Amino acid sequence: MGELPVLKQLYADLNIQIFNMKKLLALLFLSPISYSAEKDVNKLWCASMNGDYEFRTKDGTYVDCITDDFAIEAEYDYKWKEAIGQSLHYAETTNKKAAILFIKRNESKKGYLSELNRVIAKFDLPIRVFVTSES
Image: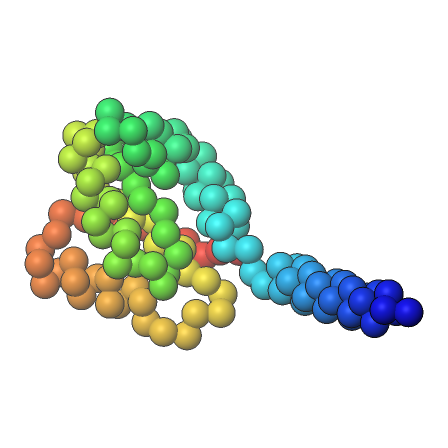
């Protein structure tokens, strides 16, 4: 007789787990997948510049795109701050000029590009900025 409450509890726990899995799957399918999309945008852009995609440096890091002149860090607009440091590191380790591929997201409302350009100008950073959109 004690088995019925235990089975009911197991059934209830299983239903909660299934519900949580359904929510997680819905979030995965409904949310933008920025990591793969960033790579896709970078691959296409890099090929259009006759660059090498995911170039491995002597330090074991990977430059998103390397051309004859530039070591380029591709980054979405809202992550522009990270792109500054990475582009300078890639330039140093490859003996190329630093550059950022600034990927403007369709839903961006903030002026990330002006923020990036303001910092580059204020500190006279030797970084070239290329701009593209995600679509």
